[in-house]
Image 1 (cartoon, rainbow, N blue to C red):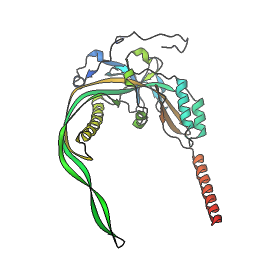
Image 2 (image 1 turned 90 degrees about the vertical axis):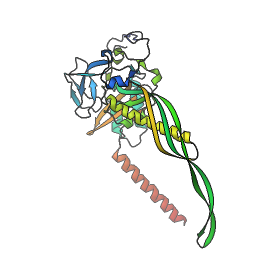
Image 3 (image 1 turned 90 degrees about the horizontal axis):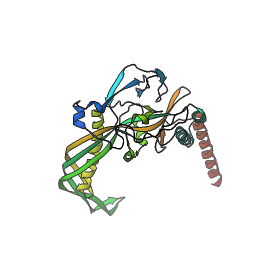
Amino acid sequence: MLCDHCGATHDIAGTGPWAGGAIREIDFQVAIADQLPSQDMEETRVSKCPNCAAQVEFDPGVHAAECPFCATPVVADTGANRHIKPKGLLPFALDEKDARKAMTDWLGRLWFAPNGLQDYTRKGRKMTGIYVPYWTFDADTRSSYRGEQGTVYHENRRVVRNGKTETIRVAKVRWRPASGQVARFFDDVLVLASRSLPKRYTDALEPWDLSALEPYQPEYLAGFRAEAYAVELTEGYEEARAHMDRVILRDVKFDIGGDRQRVDHIDTRISDVTFKHILLPVWLAAYKYRGKTYRFVVNGRTGAVQGERPWSAWKIAFAVVLGLILAAGVGYVAAINQ
């Protein structure tokens, strides 16, 4: 940890109750039966943004702040939020300066972005470092299937075109029944547990190096904010299962083989389902520029950037006019050469 006021540093390695140990998975069935032990639960002071519904944790002494996701003023709630405790996190590898540079470089590559917004982001307030909540799921699956394997073959066919008889090759498929079993162990299927940012942004920040997860210690959160999960465990599992089903379907098609595949039925038996709640590092900027909020996210490990693409009306108009001028010039030259 680094103190922003005096510059003192403190190594948090080797501290905390999980130090030196592996990150423990939690039994999914125990959790949905609401039988988790107290050490797997925690209470935090959380405020819900009235504009974007982000649930952000506040320090005890903070009563009013600005939502880091949409720049809306927020008054901290007085109640506590009881939820499943994080088991692991990826510490920030980029500082605010590096994250801001990644964001401004990304904006600079967007030719149609307003120059004023680019200048504003360079000179604006500091970006906010936020630990975003995710679920990960592990599961052992065995699937039996029924379907058909298709083999492509060709036949010659005589057709009449423009009064002439021609021979063409026509592709056909010969189908035969297929059945079998596939098995796969899923490890760390990642599901976003936040509703504050569009999923297309956070998905585009992947991949995350989950092998580098550290056991959760509250000290890692010093100087950053943490968002409480808004996607409940059962809903997260449904999304994870949808991902697993897509992968299993791909495995089945590969197992059927041939040139084409038809899958009539898949019966999947799933066992040993476990999960964990983890936090991943994101630098976030939310700017109100000319009445509109722009949000940008930066992967706190790799520097990958995503955000709402801004457009400059005058740049677009200039490009249209320039295109018309060039088109007219090409047409004029072509007319002269005729």
